[in-house]
Length: 457
Image (cartoon, rainbow, N blue to C red; front, side, top):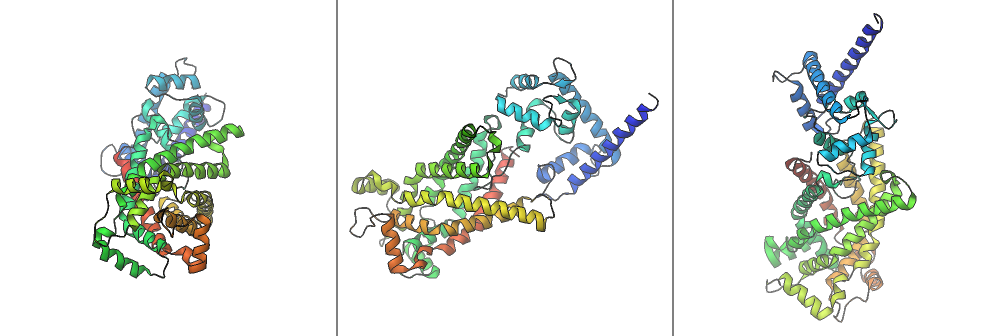
């Protein structure tokens, strides 16, 4: 004993010093990189928890006191969960503690929770594993806080649209994430509405036109308000489109996992691509009539300056062209989904790996690097499928029963190629690409702000 006690004390002291160095590293990280998955806010909260005398500095003694208090707090809750008092937490004990706290959790989530904390993969959680997982968690260690901390740690950005979590359970308040996504999408689309209107106007032009000429035409027709025509519908469709895409993505992942007999979190790149593309197609089909009415509104020629109401415009389409008219251009729209998602995801992952290897020297890319990678991949994907967008917009904008109406997708293709050449398929590409950077940046910034205001961060 005389030999083992000093050795144990020495080992514990080395562990404590190692934790202190980890704490210093977290608090040295810039706000956008943060530490431990929580960003600058996490670092500030941890600093505040350790700084007992509130002098803005944390020394080794301050940190040691924090560690002693936190370890005691964690031991108490560990003992409360370990109802059999056998020195470890069994999965069923953890499940009962969560249920008692009002958190319903299925077997798959419980297994993932235990797997994340259980470092030696023996199916149980020892106090050392429990302590190591939560020792630098700055908030009160209640079972609810611990569960939501684990959920935030496990969120993954799939690089599709704005930051969408890999898995949001009903316990993490999915509605709040949808609100955050809806507000960020609506803000982004409103800010870039002039570029969207400019793009649509140029896409439907069969004569030679320039960006400057299109800007002049929009201004002459409706002054400043003319650049925002149709934006209301664009904003209205953000929330349902995001919600449908997200839930369809989750259900499709579940189906792919069951068909392959694999774990849901490991369906692979091809599985995510398939699920993402099909989810986008489902969402696009569901909200497509709104998209068509928006395009008709944006391209409506109003020499008198009077724009029809949404109700009147929708009623005219229904009465004069029939219900099928609301889905004109759907096929080219859906055809562009999978290649766009494939190009976007492939380029995004490639750029992220390249930045990690050549720029960041094996450190994980921060939010700004991810935003840059997403912007480039999105722009490249949009450029590759842009001809299909032009074909879709021209089918949407033209009345189905007019004499010069396109007979279908192939008719648009051949007429455009014959009269305008290859360049005709890229009309409006410049304002479309100019939209990419501000749209992605605004969406990201507003999304992060909304997450904090809704206590999701």
